[in-house]
Image 1 (tube, rainbow, N blue to C red):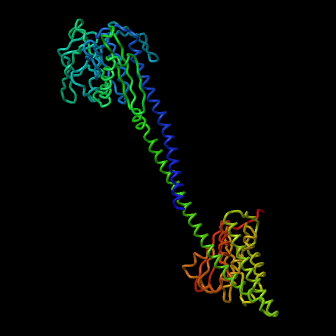
Image 2 (spheres, one colour; image 1 turned 30 degrees about the vertical axis):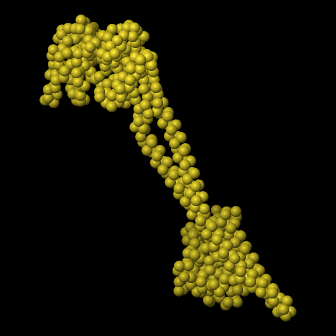
Image 3 (cartoon, helix red, strand yellow; image 1 turned 90 degrees about the horizontal axis):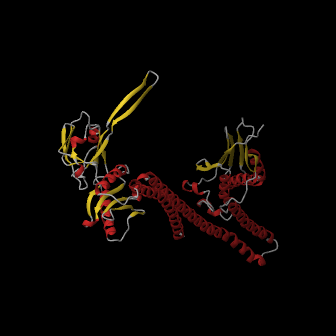
Length: 549
């Protein structure tokens, strides 16, 4: 049986795990699709910014590339990025590649004409007298600038910033050094001179700049691990393109763990390639951005699995208790029936040899034994019906005092036979002792308590009815032999007989109090038993019923 329940629990646990996995896979796939859609959109940008031109010099390609890198710097650190200009006629030599850079801006000269300046309205007109311009500065070593440093020199007027020995063409500030101070420290960087610089248009830096109005920092990820991965994959992809294994254009390869996007432009009849390569890890991004969703989902799974295990364990224990109870019940019934059946058989065996005068006595004994067996079977059937819920309670207003008095009258002969002093005590202030219950069921309960008290008492039985504010308590006490402390909790069990009463078990099936317990449970009543030197007491308490006026 245990193996069956273990298998049952395992099946449900696995089923819960499968459902959880399917739902989380579906959720994760949707989120990954969003990330991959973003990669497809990113891969579209180079095509939009570069157009379909197939002619271009390295200088013009570099100019357009740097302009596109400005916008691609906004992609963020989740996407690895690498871009380069490749000379295919020199073994795929890289002439220029992406890295962090600075943009130097001169706003030009603007004349502002105030048209109206009053307390209610201000209107002015700007006229651009001298156009502004921008040049880009790359460095020989990767930039390692803090946010505070970048913020400090973004608007350089009045700042200690120096560009020495540098030159400019239409795109770059190249050669020389860039010096700035921050936090009482002076830092000097060597300005790179890219191979794609147009030296023919080069002039000293001082001739280009009239006034340095702004320095803006563009980060392309620096030496981050994902950028290095993009660089490595880009080199391999370009090598395949040079070998003719792949074609130019846009190619997006979507995946769960890694998604890549490559864009290759061919210029000057294949002499130069402008490449863009992007890489990201969708699953890592989704898990990081939705970590709490996954944590709560796992906790929910653990909770569900725990509920399943608890429920299966409870079912197993209930089944085990049921089987033990059934086994005990079977043994008890067999034991209880053995006595009357033996007695009945003995009487029947002697029937032929019994005198006519004694036959009525034998008949009465046989009938008594048969009635006893019939009574026991009837009580067992009642117990079964009540416990499995097949008996419907027919509730009505039941006066417990009147019911107790009627049952006392029906047991009058037994009371007189044992010369028992049975007294019913009530509260003087209570008008009635009415509960909302099943009359026949309550008859079984009180009759069982009363017949047991009559059977085991010595001389006195006290029945007490007390009415509290919202409840009524019924109790019955007899002065007979008490019940051992260890047996008090067992008196409600099926086929329970105390050791002191083994001699009387041929008259007592031991199922009466089990029926009582089931009836009281069905009525949501409180009940109990205690025993001491003053006797044994059984009691129950139910909600009082007040008829609506």
